[in-house]
Structures are given as structure tokens and as C-alpha cells.
Amino acid sequence: MTATDADAPLIERVKLGDVKAFEMLVVKYQRRIERLIGRMVRDVDLVPDIAQETFIRAYRAIPQFRGDSAFYTWLYRIAVNTAKKALVDLKRDPIVTESARAMRDDDDETSRVETELSHGETPEAMLASKEIATAVNASIEALSEDLRQAITLREIEGLSYEEIAEVMNCPIGTVRSRIFRAREAIALRLRPLLDTREGERW
Amino acid sequence: MSQWSESKLPPMESLSSLVDGELEASAVARACGQWRDDHETRAQWHAYHLIGDVLRSDDLATDGEHDAGFLAAFRQRLANEPVVLAPSAPSVRQAPIPVRRRSWATPMAVAAGFVAVAGVLVVTQMSGGLSLRGGQSQADLARASNVLGGTVVVAAGPASGAVASDPPVVVLNGQLIRDVRLDEYLAAHKKFGGSSAPGGPSGFLRNAAADGSAR
Image (cartoon, rainbow over all chains, first blue to last red; front, top):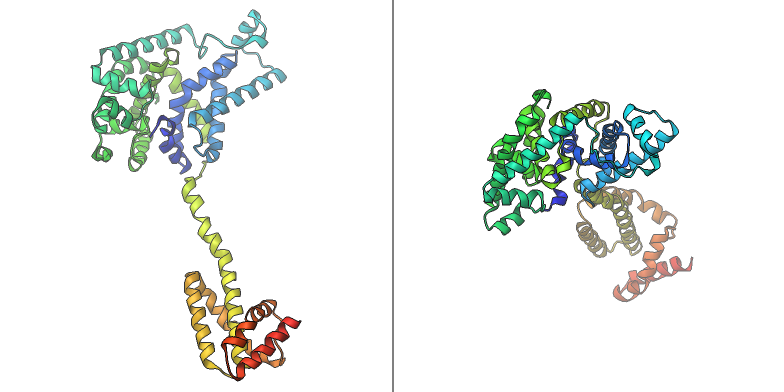
């Protein structure tokens, strides 16, 4: 099993009519999709809307997804097309939001290649994001060597459990348990930062 | 492979395996159900993925508020969408093939059966009740039916039924019926009729076959 088909079980569930399984995929990819769209669309207020539209289109089209490419590759293409269409619509019918107006005062909109802000958030939110990144990296450092290696091989190198078992010379069950324990340890430090005001929202 | 029997894994460990696509198929439905029913599981699923994202790139760090809000808004939109239903491709792809094969096999079997039986009948009628040949050919037909498969059992019914009512028509003209397939059959067996069936009947058969091909 490779990283390519890691989403296959959930996609299978979606095709069986399990709408919630699609929500799980949304939670998984939403950050990456928003960052991608944020690089294409200057108007930060539009980023979440275009990301929503991307996921809705993906949901409608999922019967056509045959697993020839990775799910994320497929989703990425939908996001790019959705963002392009949004930009075209915007030129035809420009509804200028506050943040977009601020941006347009600075420079010409044709030069919008990328923006430093990934999600166009408030300074508060940016601070929170930074805290989260710091917390994750600090907890990784605090892990035992075995746990750190296991989760790094999985998340950064994208190896399967079987491949990690080979690299670490241990049974697959041990790999599974090490990755889980690493996540638990990091989540323990992370969750208080995530569950700020509305912990029950999930 | 004892590691794969994870149906007894603690719920959150199953969730962690599902994050990596390493949860056995039978446990996936349960993990999804858990996600649906338990907000703690949803929060943990988010945390696991956020950890992965941040490990790959710091700029993917977002506050939980934003992500939860995104999902809440998405749910509202998703609620207006018709539920997609597209069961797995392999099972869909496999099903029609035997059906399709059978759909043309049945008429073919009927046609083949009819031609064979009609041919045999002509031979037996004209040869004045050479019951041995008829019996043999019926045995051949039965054997052919077995080769063609179970559907032919159904096909054999109408074929033999047609044969039972047809003989008068066949003989009534005093000539051969004008079925092209029968002509072909007789043409193909022209030599055969002469050489392998000695005695009176073979003369008849030879004439009949010549008649058929002359037209």
C-alpha cells in the first residue's frame, strides 16, 4: 500500500453513499486546498468560498474518480479550475470585498501570482497558527527516537507501514502502534491550542 | 499477518491507521461511524491531519477555529447536494459481462438447436424413419447443449417445441423448406450424406441436398 491509495477506503465509503466519509476527506485536504487557492486568488475573502466550491464539485464528480491518479492530484486539478473560473467571473462581475480593495490599491491585479498570507487571516489567527506550528515541532523533538522516526517516515517520507517496518526492522503492528503513540503525544500538546473557544464545534 | 487483525484496535488507533489508509476494509465502516457519532473523534481526526500537514510544511498550520468553521459551512452546502451513489467499479464492471454473453448466447443456441433438429428431422423424414440416425443426432444435440452451458436448457425447450409442430410443414411441400441455414446445413453435408450412409436413404438424401444447393 502506498500513499497514493491511502484515501481509497474513504472514497469507497463515499461511493457507497457515506456523506460523512467525504467530510473526513475535506478535513484532511482543506488546508492544502486553501493554500493552493490562496496563491491563485488575491482576494483572501474568496479563498474559503472557492475551496468550498472545489469540494462540492469534487463530491459531485466522485463517481468519475477511478483512482488512476492520487485523490489529491485529482482534487488539485478541480481546485485550480474552480479558482480560474472564479477569477473569470470576478472580472465579469466584480464584487469588491474590503480586503480585495486594499490589495488592489497596492498593485495591478494581473501580477497576482502569489500572496504571503496562506489563508488571509487576522493577525490573531496568524499568531495562533504560528503557535500551532511551534507546538507540533516542539512535541516532535520531545518524542522518543522510535516514535519520531516512525511518524517522520510516514508523514514526511510518505512510506507505507510495510516499508517503515522494513526500515525500522520491526513488525507492522509495532509501526502502527508507534505512529499512533506519536500522534497521541503531539495531539496532547496541540489540542488545548485547537480547542480554544468552541471545542464542541467538531 | 497477525498485525492486520486490527478489528480489536482501540478506536483512536483505528483512526490513526485510517489516516494512513492502513486500516483493514472491514474496520473502515466502524471508524467512519465513530467519526459521525463522536465529536471527540472528529477533533482527533483533525488534529492527526493537522500534525501531518505541519510536519510537511509550517505554513499549513491553521487554528482549529478556522478549520472547524470551514467544515461547518461545507456541511451546510453538502446538505443541499444529492447523495452520490457509485458502488465500486470492479463489482459493477464484472456483473454485465456474463449477462451480455448470455444475452446473445441464448438466441444463438436456439438458432443452432433449431437448425440441427430441423436438419435431423428432414433426414429422418425423408429416409423413412431411420430412427438410429435421429437418435444419434439428438444425442449430439444434447451433448452440444451441455457444452454451451446452463442457459441452453431453457433454449432447448422452445427449439424442440418448434420442431414438434414444424414437421408437417416441412413434409407438406414435398420439397425442402426454404430456410437458408438448412440449405447451408445440407450443402455442408452433401458429401457426407452420400458416403457415410449406405443403402436406400442415402439416395434420397443426395437428391435433397442437390435440390437445396441448386436453388
